[in-house]
Image (cartoon, rainbow, N blue to C red; front, side):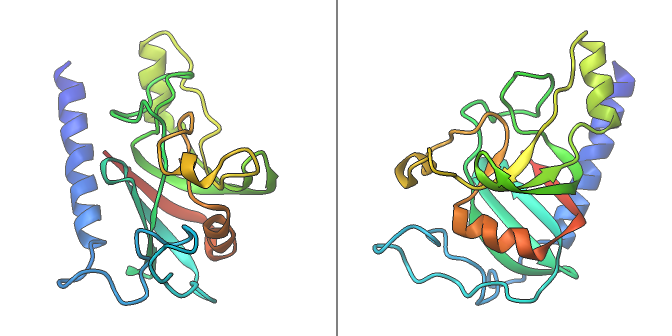
Length: 191
């Protein structure tokens, strides 16, 4: 028990240090970061310019804020509003709990023809996730993605949490991420 508390404290400390190093500069995000309403139709605020030829090498997801920030060489490039699961409080522990994981992972694949349009694979579960699930006598699960909405999800539904543990953006946004996020990019998922 004490070992788990110490390990959890160490992970939280490292996460805080990493997030602080990747925080927005004083005065807020740069002018080309996305408005919270990017990709939301005719009544939306003006959209941020596309990322262009930039290579995204790290991503930070703030679950409680439903926000994802993308970085290139430590510089914030854009933020996105995300949809998660209705059961998104706390880290994913076992297969079927419909939670989004928390911790450090990597983009480990991409699918141009997924059920939800396109996706980027997230390297969940890591060895700690597997060990935690085994202690509970369960499987850790897997198949966590950053994906679009696809034809079955309306824009209105996307405004609420609807995934079963993944991180969802609009189809237009996953197009942008699909072309700019490098395989192997770090993704830190915070509470």
